[in-house]
Structures are given as C-alpha cells and as structure tokens.
Image (cartoon, rainbow, N blue to C red; front, side):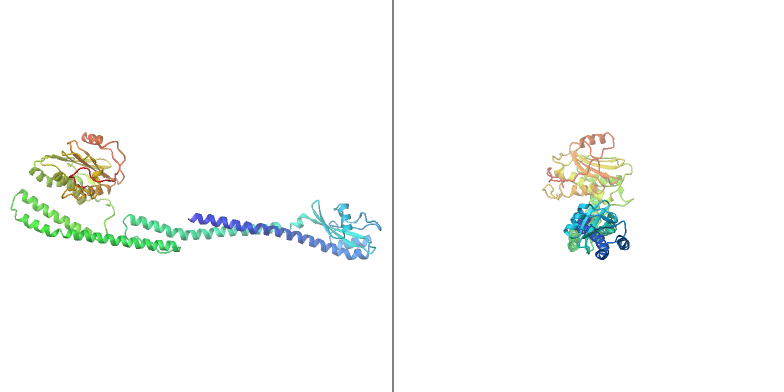
Length: 479
C-alpha cells in the first residue's frame, strides 16, 4: 500500500508539472523574443526623427552610433525617384534587397531570418517623400537571453514538487501501513496464545474500525476461554463426590496388593482432578513451550507407569514387556503429560482387548528424537488415520474419543507426531514420536519398515508431523 501511494503520487505530480512547466517555458521563450525585438524597435525609432530631417551621411552616422551599434544597425536610403530598390548607405546590410524592397512597398515593419539571428526592417518616411528602411540586427543570443536560466528554474521547481509530493505520499503511506502492520502483528500474537495482545486504535478511519473490531474479538476470545476454564473446573469439581465415596470404600477393603492398588489409584485420581481444577482456573493458560532444562526422564516415567499397570496385568493374565527403559532418557515433555499419555494408551489396551492379551512398551532414544512404542497382541485397527479423530470415540461406554488426542497433542508440542500401525505382536502399535530439537520430523518411506529396523536395534528414521482426521474405524478403541 505504501509503495502504491508513492507511485500514484509520483505519476500525478509528473503529469501536473509537465502540463504547467512546458507551456510556461514556451511563454518565457516568446517573452524573451518580444523583449529583444522591442529593444530593436526602440533603436530604430531613435533614428527615425533624424531621417525625417536630413539624409546627410555624416549626421546619420553620428545618429546611428548614438542610437545603437554600427555593426547591428543599417540605414537604407533610396536614390531620389527610385522606388524599385534600395542601397545600403550606412552600416552593414544583412537582409536581402527583396526584403528591403518589400518593406518599402508595404510601408510597415517586418522581421526576417538571417545568419546568426534575425533583423527588424522598419520603414521611415523621408522629407522628400521617399521611404527609407532602418535595419536592426537582433542576434540569436539576445532572443534567447535568460530563457535557459528560466527553464532551469522551472525544472528545479518541478523536481522539488515531485520530490515533495513523493515524500508526503510516503509519510501518508507510513501512517496507513503502520496500523495495518500492528493489526497483523496483533493477530499473530493472538494466534500464538498471547491473549493480552491488543492493537492501538489509530490511523485512517477504516483501520481504526478494524482495530476496534480486533480488540473486541480478542476480549471475546479471552472471555470465552475463561468461561471454558470455569466450566472445566466446575465439571472436574463434580467428580469430588464420587471420588470421596470411592476413597471411603477403598479404605474398607483391608490389606492386600489389590486394596493398596485401589487406594493408590483413587489418590492419584484425586490429585489429577485437583490439577485439572487448578489449571483450569489459572489466570493465564499455559501456551508456551517448555524452556531449557524443562522436561522429564521418559525411562523413569515408563518404569513407574508399567509398575502401576503390571499388577492389573498379572490379575488378568497378561504378558507384558518393557524395553529401553534401563537408562535415563530426557525429553522436553512434562512428567504429568507423558504419564497421562501412557495411561491413556495402556488403559485402551486393558479396556478394549480381551484378558490374557499381551502388550509391550518400547523406548528408543535417538540423536534428535525419542520414540515410545505401545503395542498389543489384539486386533489391528483397519483405518489408523480415521482412528485419530478427536472426540468421536468408539461409541461404547467409557469411550470419549480424547485418549489418543491427549497423546497427539503431547507429541506435537515437541514437533513430533503419533502414528498407528500393526505391531509385531499381531495387534495395534501406537508410536509416539517426541522431537528433541523442536523440528518437524522428515518424511520416511514406511511405518512397517521402520518398525522392523527398530526391532533390529537401529535408530528409526523420523517421519512428518501428521494432523489426524476422520472418525475411528476400530470399534472399542478410545479416541
């Protein structure tokens, strides 16, 4: 917009300058010519009184010398009774005899072009009744005297007008562009989660209205998010009553591994509910990425969660295996987020596969990424991409369709992704790609080939971040 205004202003100003400067320059040239010939007429008029009195050569020479220059003036006096031509009695003749004779016959002044300029031929009546012709030479330099300077001044004024108009248009463009840029920056900040982003109401009327509309929209977004957080907090708070009943019932179970696990699960559930309430009612949503040094030890979290689920696996007769969790593996993910993702995937295994179905958790540590594989020996999902749709679920009781979405958002917060495929156990394999440097994973050639390479101990090739779509195709799996 800024450069468009500058170009329009430049074009309009140039046209205006040309439209006025060119005619004015021609007028100045004509004025200079008229001035030069007016001076010539005055010189010729100074000689006319002397010619009407006398035709004596010596006296006329003195008159010519006092009136002008001998080299620039000539007096042509005809012989008595001779009207067919004239003779150059005094001064240098530059006009032709035909021009002089024509002026004598017509009896009025005339100008004619000669070498180096022009001449003014002025007829003067003598006392004898004859017509003498006074010739005044006007050189070209006198005709154009001051024209070049005047044209230079006009050109300078025109250039100054063009530069000034461009500068003014540029300043006006800046006044229009800056509010638009601030509006764009505010939209980017709001899109990045900076809910306090607002735009100053300034600039042209249209941009002022756009800034007011943007600020109003940002206020509404903040209000909607606050309402959503309050709703989440209220819904979470409603879980306290059934949790209290569960805790009282768990306390009456007595001793034993199952009772301890039940009480531990109830306590963990209470902590998670409290965390949800505190997070939902926080003043600002946590939208920024984890800073340097943040994160957790993925191996420790895997061992901890497998320790929790292993007791239930033994009760249901499930074989399980953990690999790659024997040494620390740092990842840029909060401990609670990774634990929630593992619980969602392992909960799907226990909820949607028959008792006795084996499962495994593998942890692979690469140079730029960490991969967590959760696989089972159940039934493979027919449409992995459709299974990633948020909020659809399987349609069965207890399936909200949010389990895999929790895992996906955790992985994508690092620049990674989640893929669903077939495991070597014969069932479903969920692969969580956690990027260590925040870059999007590059394309790989196939999930099955990568799985075989990982099973052989190779570092897997990264894959691109995938945005899940369509509803799940495998009934029974939580999404």
